Length: 512
Image (tube, rainbow, N blue to C red; front, side):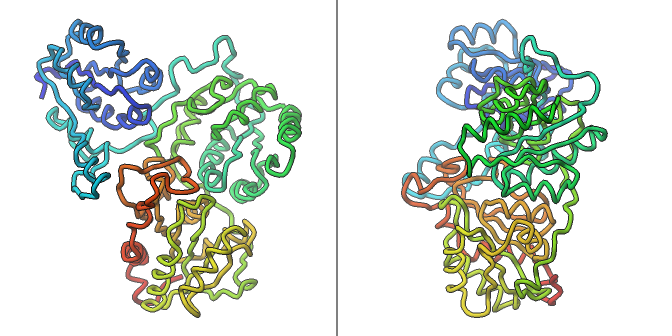
């Protein structure tokens, strides 16, 4: 441990953006351990702005070459160098520098290669990269395992203001529009942002731009919000774009909050003349925004959306808003009042779907052991997979509502479930928002992307493979052809998680 209470510490992390974002809890832990320390990070030029948005760093050094960076590091006289990259280049850089103390995190590259090539298991692969970062800091007196992502890890990026543009009105905005044209799950995870916008600006009129299929989610959460429907899937792209532009101009909005990271959303707000436009630095239309907030993969998407309040001087509090109760469809579909759990076996992405036979096996076991019957849900495109699950589960084990419910009825059904079994999907987030315990099977996507079910009564079942995640939303087929991310997840694992979440009441019949 450094003798000085204010040591000079340099962290090395040359790539990539996601890994630099991932260092935030480790940097915060260092800052808490040494409040007066000079803590800097060496990064590649393209990542300097992102790293500079970390309030726990004293500054950022930009890597140019081994010789130039070694000379700069020695000139600044660091007491400790911590290599959080562990590549041949960063190892050589450490060797060239004269810092009295050098630390390095364990990458376990050999274990990864052996697992990918020959499926040799290793306990080392069970450790998250963040845990490895924290372990590297233990010799400095930083306790491992006590830090996790937080909303304060990343402030509005320095220089994020659009050059020469006004910073928006000094008084509270009169009219606010929230642009969220994404899928159902993304919209559910935007609800806390909508709620806290209301609380931050109670006298402002708030509108939401959303797809017709997701508008009901916002209406349930905030009945007083005006809905602007984005019919981009059913209309000419250009005709709908310019119709929405006119709608936004007519609304005379003075603030646009844009969690949707598309060029189209940012361009709509810009061309509509909305003077202040807040969005993420990773947005395809970031150059059209007046306020850009760093996008952290390490935060849950619900919390990530709340960081858009930081430029508006908000104090984000990660919590679900109270969703209103939609009409009760139980009589319509002939569902009993208790003894039910929900199952969502489908997804828009085929690789996100756990095999139907394994869903059916878990359903059969819960039905045979506990008398619980499954309610299968999904849209019209999920009818086929739901029918397969129903057939394999056997007579009496399921109620199949796939393709039969509107969004309000789907929400009402999910709310009444004792448990929800699902792939990574929009209904998963609805269940979490209602406080229904969720068992989520994750294959091509991972918790680190931030879209896992939010809350303490949920479990994500996944296998730790080098090839995960293969894409942000999954793929049409496994890029490597083996689909091990789903095949390695057994019915036993999902069944065990379901029983854990059901708790003692499952054994006594005290389920809702």
